[in-house]
Length: 95
Image 1 (spheres, rainbow, N blue to C red):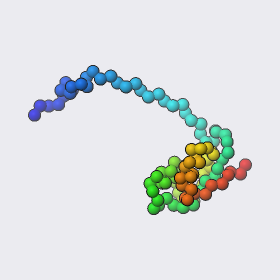
Image 2: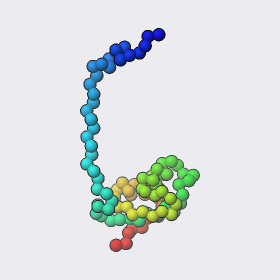
Image 3: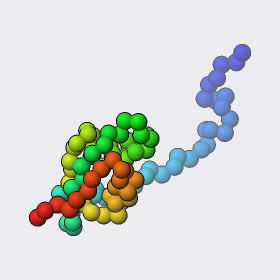
Image 4: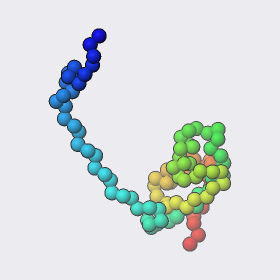
């Protein structure tokens, strides 16, 4: 059986590398951005629910049952809250 070496692999020697990806500009944190705020409280556990619901809770920052977080009201957050509406309660933050 012949040994496999770099020279034995045809077609790879002349391949050009793809350009490196550009880094995105850093995003503003929730504390720095303006706009309305929502208080989200997890009222039901993610146990026994689909993995996508559990991942959505984690993405929102809810790690434990009865945890409360404050998030900025924007379309992406609203979409996540719609997905897990049966596991959370939402109210506007009092100023």
